Length: 138
Image (cartoon, rainbow, N blue to C red; front, top):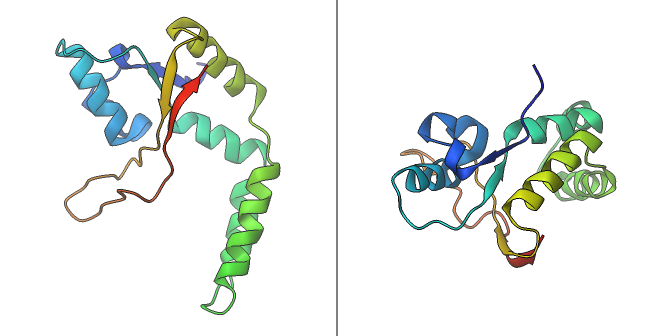
Protein backbone atom coordinates (compact mmCIF):
# COMPACT_ATOMS: atom_id res chain seq x y z
CA UNK A 1 0.00 0.00 0.00
CA UNK A 2 1.41 3.38 -0.95
CA UNK A 3 1.70 6.17 1.59
CA UNK A 4 -0.78 9.02 1.26
CA UNK A 5 1.02 12.31 1.72
CA UNK A 6 -1.96 14.61 1.14
CA UNK A 7 -5.62 14.48 2.13
CA UNK A 8 -8.32 16.86 0.88
CA UNK A 9 -10.57 18.40 3.52
CA UNK A 10 -13.55 16.33 2.31
CA UNK A 11 -11.54 13.15 3.02
CA UNK A 12 -10.69 14.15 6.59
CA UNK A 13 -12.54 13.82 9.88
CA UNK A 14 -11.59 13.82 13.55
CA UNK A 15 -10.17 10.28 13.39
CA UNK A 16 -7.45 11.69 11.12
CA UNK A 17 -6.06 14.01 13.81
CA UNK A 18 -2.82 11.94 14.07
CA UNK A 19 -2.30 12.44 10.31
CA UNK A 20 -3.31 16.07 9.85
CA UNK A 21 -3.32 17.73 13.28
CA UNK A 22 -6.09 19.66 14.99
CA UNK A 23 -6.61 22.39 12.39
CA UNK A 24 -6.74 19.86 9.56
CA UNK A 25 -9.16 17.57 11.38
CA UNK A 26 -11.44 20.50 12.20
CA UNK A 27 -11.38 21.74 8.59
CA UNK A 28 -12.42 18.25 7.52
CA UNK A 29 -15.25 18.17 10.04
CA UNK A 30 -16.47 21.62 8.95
CA UNK A 31 -16.34 20.60 5.28
CA UNK A 32 -18.29 17.39 5.93
CA UNK A 33 -20.87 19.33 7.97
CA UNK A 34 -21.53 21.58 4.97
CA UNK A 35 -19.94 24.78 6.21
CA UNK A 36 -18.45 27.04 3.52
CA UNK A 37 -14.78 26.05 3.64
CA UNK A 38 -12.54 26.86 0.65
CA UNK A 39 -11.24 23.75 -1.13
CA UNK A 40 -7.93 22.68 0.30
CA UNK A 41 -5.82 19.84 1.57
CA UNK A 42 -3.46 18.85 4.33
CA UNK A 43 0.05 17.49 4.01
CA UNK A 44 0.10 14.48 6.33
CA UNK A 45 2.51 13.36 9.00
CA UNK A 46 3.44 10.59 6.55
CA UNK A 47 5.01 13.27 4.34
CA UNK A 48 6.95 14.57 7.33
CA UNK A 49 8.16 11.07 8.20
CA UNK A 50 9.22 10.52 4.58
CA UNK A 51 11.13 13.84 4.70
CA UNK A 52 12.92 12.83 7.91
CA UNK A 53 13.79 9.38 6.56
CA UNK A 54 14.88 10.60 3.13
CA UNK A 55 17.31 13.09 4.69
CA UNK A 56 18.53 10.83 7.54
CA UNK A 57 17.34 13.44 10.01
CA UNK A 58 16.16 11.25 12.88
CA UNK A 59 19.66 10.00 13.69
CA UNK A 60 21.17 13.42 12.98
CA UNK A 61 18.82 15.19 15.39
CA UNK A 62 19.10 12.44 18.02
CA UNK A 63 22.89 12.72 17.95
CA UNK A 64 22.79 16.53 17.95
CA UNK A 65 20.61 16.79 21.06
CA UNK A 66 22.18 13.87 22.92
CA UNK A 67 24.53 16.09 24.93
CA UNK A 68 22.42 19.27 24.94
CA UNK A 69 22.86 21.68 27.81
CA UNK A 70 21.61 25.19 28.50
CA UNK A 71 25.00 26.45 27.33
CA UNK A 72 24.97 24.79 23.90
CA UNK A 73 21.26 24.43 23.06
CA UNK A 74 21.23 27.55 20.87
CA UNK A 75 24.13 26.37 18.71
CA UNK A 76 22.57 22.89 18.48
CA UNK A 77 19.34 24.51 17.28
CA UNK A 78 21.30 26.47 14.65
CA UNK A 79 22.98 23.26 13.48
CA UNK A 80 19.66 21.43 13.15
CA UNK A 81 18.00 24.37 11.34
CA UNK A 82 20.91 24.54 8.91
CA UNK A 83 20.59 20.83 8.13
CA UNK A 84 16.82 21.16 7.66
CA UNK A 85 17.29 24.02 5.19
CA UNK A 86 19.68 21.89 3.14
CA UNK A 87 17.34 18.89 3.15
CA UNK A 88 15.28 17.88 0.11
CA UNK A 89 11.61 16.95 -0.06
CA UNK A 90 11.35 13.38 -1.39
CA UNK A 91 10.22 13.33 -5.02
CA UNK A 92 7.10 11.25 -4.32
CA UNK A 93 6.00 13.70 -1.61
CA UNK A 94 6.69 16.69 -3.86
CA UNK A 95 4.73 15.13 -6.73
CA UNK A 96 1.73 14.39 -4.52
CA UNK A 97 1.70 17.96 -3.16
CA UNK A 98 1.92 19.39 -6.69
CA UNK A 99 -0.91 17.10 -7.80
CA UNK A 100 -3.06 18.24 -4.86
CA UNK A 101 -2.38 21.90 -5.70
CA UNK A 102 -3.34 21.25 -9.32
CA UNK A 103 -6.59 19.57 -8.21
CA UNK A 104 -7.45 22.31 -5.72
CA UNK A 105 -6.61 25.10 -8.17
CA UNK A 106 -3.05 26.22 -8.75
CA UNK A 107 -4.06 29.88 -9.16
CA UNK A 108 -5.89 30.11 -5.85
CA UNK A 109 -4.50 31.86 -2.81
CA UNK A 110 -3.66 29.52 0.06
CA UNK A 111 -2.90 29.74 3.75
CA UNK A 112 0.01 27.49 4.68
CA UNK A 113 -0.31 26.66 8.36
CA UNK A 114 1.18 24.27 10.82
CA UNK A 115 -0.96 21.94 12.88
CA UNK A 116 0.63 19.88 15.61
CA UNK A 117 -0.90 16.45 16.10
CA UNK A 118 -0.92 17.09 19.86
CA UNK A 119 -2.30 20.59 19.43
CA UNK A 120 -4.95 22.12 21.65
CA UNK A 121 -5.01 19.29 24.13
CA UNK A 122 -6.22 20.02 27.66
CA UNK A 123 -2.62 19.76 28.89
CA UNK A 124 -0.71 21.30 25.93
CA UNK A 125 -1.04 24.24 23.58
CA UNK A 126 1.20 25.05 20.64
CA UNK A 127 -0.57 28.23 19.54
CA UNK A 128 1.74 30.79 17.96
CA UNK A 129 4.83 28.57 17.94
CA UNK A 130 4.92 27.95 14.17
CA UNK A 131 4.78 30.33 11.24
CA UNK A 132 1.74 30.89 9.04
CA UNK A 133 2.05 32.00 5.43
CA UNK A 134 -0.97 33.70 3.84
CA UNK A 135 -1.88 34.43 0.22
CA UNK A 136 0.46 31.82 -1.23
CA UNK A 137 -0.29 31.10 -4.88
CA UNK A 138 0.06 27.42 -5.86
